[in-house]
Image: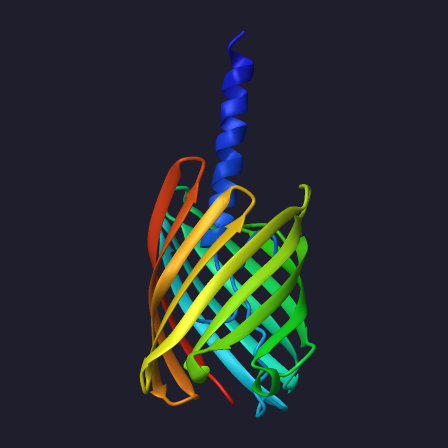
Length: 244
């Protein structure tokens, strides 16, 4: 008589673990993708010089027993249209498991923030995953509407995202995120974001240093993931190259 409640608790714990991983990993189970220095938020700022240029972002995450490394090249066809590919390798030391995730995103903006002071657009993404010893499988798809507002004479930006994800073999989930970045010194800015997907929540914040103005950036941040009363904290370190 008590087997079913125990099985239910095991399934609930499994769903919670999956939800935590979704926000803690660089590429979630549902393939929402982000713009650095954020983990769950994409921006809608069209840079006028982003025409036929590449960028490359990379970062390391440590969340509880999990370690992951990600790389994400991006190509801007024009200031308002870009595509990004993201690859992550994650190691769960507690479970002794290694997984890989890949994601592809196409983003288009409908106006230019330099002219209007705000911008919005749409981003569509698809994800894949691969467990140790297995092949690549489609992991799901997502749709995001990003909005960005310039503040304090262009020294800061507020980013808002709303969207939905459809993981493989699961119901679609609504998600949202809000992020703020502000320049503190000529080459240093502060960033913070909050996100929610299903029952999982993410808080993330840190500093970005421009080692070479608008060309090379170093990000250092901390994150906290919460779901179902459980919490995990971790570190994020990133390095990005732009206008390649």
